[in-house]
Image 1: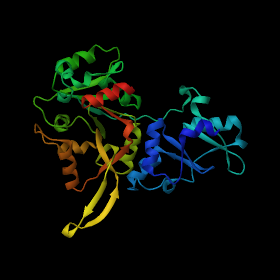
Image 2: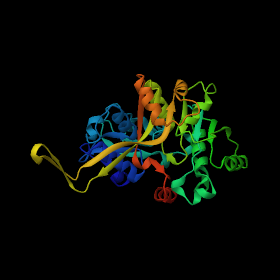
Image 3: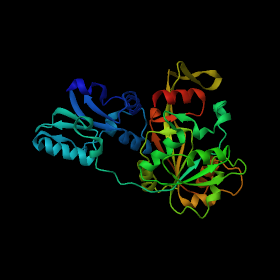
Image 4: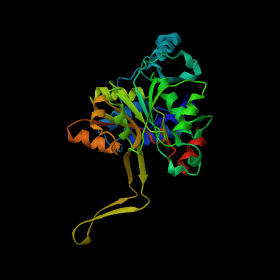
Length: 351
């Protein structure tokens, strides 16, 4: 048993950041927590995301967020009972416990089921605004020929990958802001075998990262997504919408947890240049904007018409009025960016 789970094991003393990095490394969203040889429980990416939202530090140990209320399988339930529990829960991993609560086995979804046997999750049908008007200057010379949303990643363009991800959760109505090479964008999409329900709207001049959404006043009456066209998130956006609703946000930003290790001792000084502290090779962690958002429809009224206006201006305006701007974190490797050539080459290497 240990052999098949060895890559997924983490200590309860490990930090949340270490757990998130291990999930990225082995490409899983669930880890098994062992205190030496004793099974303590499961920790999921959702547990860590909720901890970050609650402002629990990423340097804190996994034990701080370890839930005693996880659902496990038991030998007494028999194979059929445990399989049905996994199917209903859509459980990627199911620890199997004996009558004394000790771990005796671990079952994996891919070993027992076909993908189609998942109990489908309820879909949402929110409008999606795709910001596709930029020139993509950092990806020249390829963007001299084609617009950035049509740059290929695998056998699709990045635009199609983004559209398909939203359609996968039930979102089918798209509004697409165009400017640079707008005719090419329209033509390409019209020739695809799959028809997307897209209403185009044109920026006559560059209006910033959110300014063109002012052109949609009166058209959108529900919360809606806004997405750039240069990155992909390995995140079910229904989780983001659930957080947005439960937290009563006006605007929610999907953020990426990015850590930087400084390879030197960092010294802080005080009066007379005297050293006050020394931190050897510290690791700094930030949340970075991924370019995907959920906005309440009232936010459109805050965007001035025909003016250059960035999403950061809108965030500041909402906060100044006492509104709520929330952040939903994803792990570093869950976000794939193609804003510049090095990032684009990494993206196509892993897709």
